[in-house]
Image 1 (cartoon, rainbow, N blue to C red):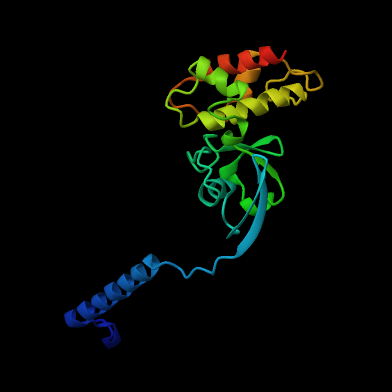
Image 2: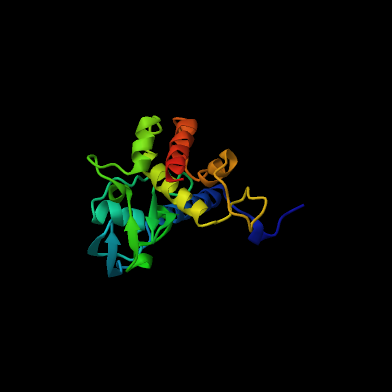
Length: 211
């Protein structure tokens, strides 16, 4: 059956059409790879009380507390691990409560009190938890240790304050420092060296010393 005249496509016409389509697709791919224009950074002044000292600095509103501590204030004791709140290496205390500093913005803590590992003790005068970690070899490679120690300090404060955890059978009862309680509360801090048993022994020692 003969095709209508307007349906007939010559070989040359098909090649020209295919080339034009390929060229158009290449342009679209090139556009997709081109970075989108970024808005100018919004800078803001932030004041934090860090380890007992008032620190003022100007930073991008998108700067995390972790990056502010490390990059703006040069306090590199707090470590950047996964940067997604999954490993706990960046744990610090804000107004006495432990948080993952990679998941919060510095501007959100204007006026807050922040305690990092540098604020707990010094090489000449270690915090009891730091001494216990050393005594029980709870640090191993050491990368997760600052976050582990900050968490451990907060865990004992949480238990003393009667804050229940996921493993509590009675939410109204004062929590006890059981092995299950300790492991549940420290589960947000990952140690790839596997020093968990040593860390648990260190925390237990400090808890027993505090009575």
